[in-house]
Image 1 (spheres, rainbow, N blue to C red):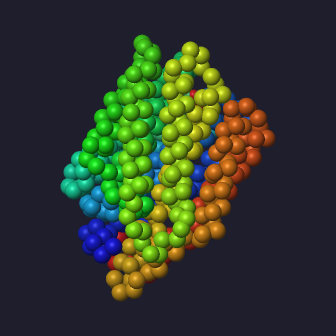
Image 2: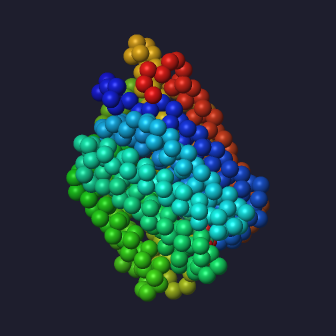
Image 3: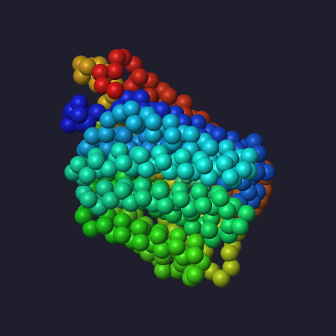
Amino acid sequence: MSDLSSRERVPPRVLPLAYFLFAHLSLILACLIPTIHPDAMLFFLSARFVGAVHFVTLGWITLTIFGALYLVAPLALRTTMRARAVDWWILAITLTGASGIVSHFWIDEFHGMAWSGLTLLLAVAMLFGRLFGPLVRSPAPLAVRLHIAFAFLNLLAAGVLGTVLATRHKSRGLNDVFAHAHLALGGWTLMLTIGVAYRLLPMFLPARPPGRVTPWVSLVAIQVSVFDLAAALWFGERTPHVAALGLTVGVGAFLSAVARMLVRRLPAPKKLIRPDVGMLHAIQALLYLTASAAMGLVLVFSDTLDLQLVSYYGAAVLLGFLAQIVLGVGMRLIPMFVWLRAWVQSGYKERPPSPHVMPVRALLWIAFAGWTVGVPVLAHGLANTNEATIRAGGAMLLTTAVAAFVNAIVVARHALRGRPHTR
Ligand code: HEM
């Protein structure tokens, strides 16, 4: 860890925590919707359903990623990303745009949503501008850095499509919505998660890092396919079979790298408590990714649109894979960051407790149980439009959201004690 502690590469103290705070609150609100209003979740294109989806995609996943970039840059990409005044502006503009989007879904008012979409796009462009220099300076493999750069370009493109969808809500077709959704989920969240996972999984498992070729395969296959898929859906000229197969190749390359990491493990730190709940979430998330790829192929190659399968597929991608991998990686990344910040706060005099003992184990297990049972229950309720099952699944996910939030507060307190030696 001593290498990580050089003053230049210490992550900022409060800014990432501010992102994580709003991300956790969004996850709680997202889970409250099916728990309190299961009737709002009966049709996947109703405004409130899509609002709940954006609480997860923008509120939980995107805000966590934005905050985590300030930690990943120094800890995993070995570059500097300090918090300047402009970074606080980016946070404020992001929150304004994202909360505007979800609240306009809630009140079913699409005109105002377009303005919120433009606001969020401004924040995304500013953050990409901030990240550009650190990405160029980072000694991490180029293919990994390009995953992050392309993820931001895809988020901008998806945001533009989302804003256009909002302006022509009444005349939009199902394929238009799917084009935006795939560009956002595949191009932004999947691309970024994979790029960062190439650096973080070897640290957390721990294991030998992937070879040089696999990250290039996933980068090219996912980028080309996601753009092709979105174009095929948006312009509606052809069926997206080739794009779907290409996306599967990209995901398969990444999964094969993870499988190799799992068999090429390195000795774990002595204080790591087994089983490692964060990594259990990550592995479960990757199983959902595999299942989603299979379901996606079935959907693309079948003649009729099976709406039940669409529900299972959507829940598997969004909740089983993306939301869960963010949860699991955060369970390891945040204590590591907090440990480093606490050490800095002590003026490098007093070693804080190990990051492995900071989390409350009982809360981690409650969170794990809630998500493990809640995702299939909610998916089943959505697929069968059964309000009682949707409510039960939502309540289980809510248990996870609350447990993860309380645990994050307990962990984050270590970083907030003492005098800030660096901001
Ligand atoms: C500027 C940002 C964004 C805007 C303005 C926006 C707007 C929209 C709009 C208008 C729809 C279609 C709703 C309808 O017509 O029924 C939609 C659907 C969707 N969006 Fe976004 N969106 C944004 C960002 C994102 C991001 C970053 C993600 C994922 C990471 C995402 C994921 C989705 C999904 C999955 C759907 C489909 C939901 C469903 O079918 O239930 N969006 N979005």
